[in-house]
Length: 117
Image (cartoon, rainbow, N blue to C red):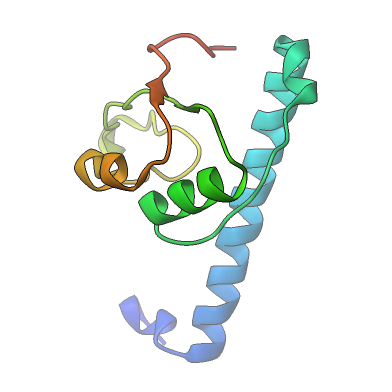
């Protein structure tokens, strides 16, 4: 297969999705270890991995865990491919208006630069 046809096979598609999930899992684990090392109090926090629509997943977990506050990172500017300075990970497209209506508690957005390592 050539061009975009390589992803049309269900076996190849599944293998690719498994690969992406594994890569993201590794990146998340590395980031979590970095945060715990830099901020020892984070060791008391519970890290969870949830798959699903972003807004619904955050709200569902907040309800289940009876959260008093949700903290998320700030918006990241888009990096362009041609300057080869892409950051690791995928950028989620969070819809604030949708998220706010679902949340059972306040939302705090961490200011830029607070978790730089």
